[in-house]
Length: 273
Image (tube, rainbow, N blue to C red):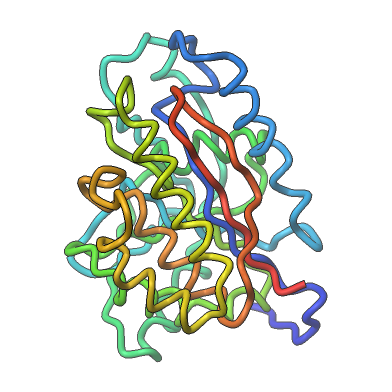
């Protein structure tokens, strides 16, 4: 991997909401205005970048392993990891190439930080990757790999994973953390809006703080107002921890503030500029 010390070319880190299932590409009866707003943000994601990335590293909420695991296939398939959608949902294509050399670099950085890791040469892109990135990179012409979450979903561990990966930002790698700032499936269709707004306000305040306080608050996120009402299980929040770890001293900025089914969703960018 080539390296650069030009900070004006340092890649940002982003935490994006990937929505529900194949929402941009299949009619699901969702509010069109809400969907168009989120789709517009994702289509414009590349405007946050100083230059075209050398590759994408995605941390998706939809992959957990006993140790952080990186995909190594040169041609990853798609993993249609959603259920009971119309047939068109299972014909979506996003044939981005993999990047085994980047996977090896990720493992080397994790090892240098004392973090054990593993590889998977069969894993495909799950919908936390191919759904949003089909909007951001419709040509699927940038090499992309995924890194799993670690089972147990410990926030401090995922902050440490992000810190280990921070050098990639100076190597042209765009780190994309794909989850949701609100993810309570039982309440998504009604009754969740208040909890979503309450937790979102806390999250926005936290992301705007200086790095040490930000990390401390995120480590204790479950004590936040409406935390467990917003995330009964935290897998959709944990990609944010990786993004914040990789952000280092960069302050976070609110990049998207919309809703899905009336529930507040936010995206955050960290770029240091």
